[in-house]
Image 1: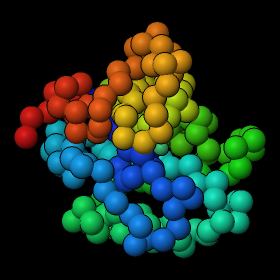
Image 2: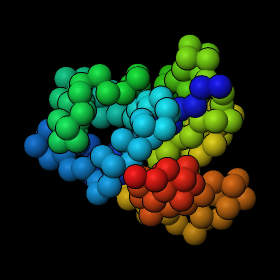
Image 3: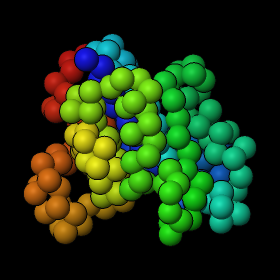
Image 4: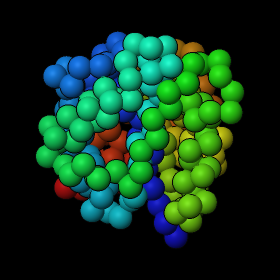
Length: 181
Ligand SMILES: [Mg+2]
């Protein structure tokens, strides 16, 4: 039985900066390093799935996104290959058949490739589309309050769908995954 955590980037691992392009503006959210090391130590495979429509919109390019990802890992003191796999979805929101969340194409392909048990996997993000992505791949999902505000409507949807809402990634790791330091 293989378990995994799929992490959103902006608003979950790093502070949400509008169309982040400059690696110097990458800021790690408190507790993320600790959360990642606890999940890794507990045997979770760790993936990252980030929507980056700024690529197709022409605001920045793949190199900018890779540079920001590398800066994030550098600030966390983690190796460049820390994530088992990373999915950067460059598409416009209305484009179909791509990897942009709430499409769960990356999750489905990854579940098959790594022979993951979907019910043992979690999707973590700050937007409802993140939760939807996990749920539609048959995984569990949680929302964190370190990015976009969780409006009442989303909180209600989350409750109905049994999606726990946490303050941040570390609280999720402590309270839902129950991983101690
Ligand atoms: Mg986000």
